[in-house]
Length: 64
Image (spheres, rainbow, N blue to C red):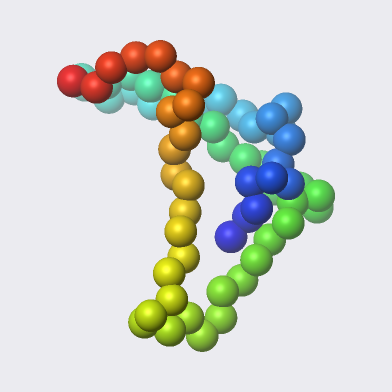
């Protein structure tokens, strides 16, 4: 897993997602030696890995 705090905004590449009923945008992150990476080994059933997949804090819009 990559620590998002180690990724600078200017490293992100905007990519369009065009679907039949949806047009949106995501960001891809090319590899950099400056990124901090972690490997979770021997995770137990009672341990949780929490991922932030989307942050709508600065997004205006609505869901349909």
